[in-house]
Length: 549
Image (cartoon, rainbow, N blue to C red):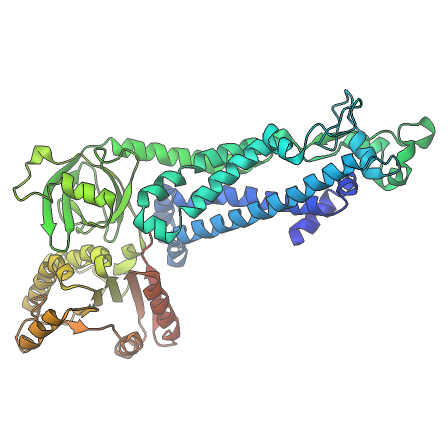
């Protein structure tokens, strides 16, 4: 409402005649959301400029860790801006529907003592200075167009229909159920944003909303001449026939900068996609998890970062994000891909996952890599005490962190600030443990040899199990090593009591800043964020960080 009032104040004289024609403030309800749309459309592309965000994150990291963490919420911000675009679009459309009804009524109510009709009559002949976009010829008594005809025969109407349809498809296909189950639908319809922005830029070129010109305001002051409309144009009246003109299009001024940045972003991605990537090793893990080890010239990474992968033999347009599971100290970089959709299944088959014999290296598919890009996990070594929480395949960012910890202690790196790591892994099935168990066993052995067993505390939770598994676990419960993971630390069953966990850590490390890092479902994220806030006291501070893709 405040923005609507501002519009009424700023354009009071210029738009007095349109207000008289429309009777109501529907024009303000259309113009104010249009201004909000310009602002939000300026913002919508910025959160998906990944290279720009990585640059900003690295630049401000040294100055403000809090500001850097806000950049990790780029997709949340992107969604919120999209919701506002949808809302203001709906208000803008509804307001203009009312406007066109008022325009039509003004033409049909042919009463020469009625000001809206007089305003509608202006420009009916050869005069192009009209106010009412629904025109009527002087030889006819009925309007030449209807709101529907104007909608599909004017620049504003046609582009409005196109960008509205594009927006509906983009938003509906972005629902989580579609994004998770039919990613290709989400991916392809999301690229309708190109049509949306083209239509948005040209939408204002029709200049369908018109106001009184500055020169006309001098010869026809609405405050003085509004009550003398029957004498407009007569010499003795002092009120000339008002002239109207549409506002010049303004949207392009709002979106040209972000569009330029996004084009640069895509050019960088195209350049990277043509850099050679070599798959050096393919490992088929249990629970249909594929590990790709790769090399690329000039590739440098940090812990917890992620890359986008394209496989041209599957699709030249699709890029999918995967967390790097290798450590910066290794001479290759790797990802673990869980087979859950059409694209990942096609990659699994292209790498020979459905064949019993070994795949020859020259038969492996070509891939393109875009990245790496920074995430919240990059900050893990900036905290003295760290909580790592992974759920299912969400453990992948922490594989990189734990490997890097291992290498740093092997190399006697005294610059490691982190003194204690608490690692929690919640997994619904026993098979998913297998690919990660080797790393944990190596870490456990290494820490024991270096007399650093207290450095890493890990708790593995099995959240679901079958009766046969339960019987097997009861038989082997007294074994020295856990029957599932082979670790000395036994697997726990059910879900952790987070309140107890946070309380114990707070009492063990008074006066510390504890970094809480999660890669898992939103509900778990809300629970951990709530615990971080409630257990932050004068003595200890929990800082919550979540991975976002």
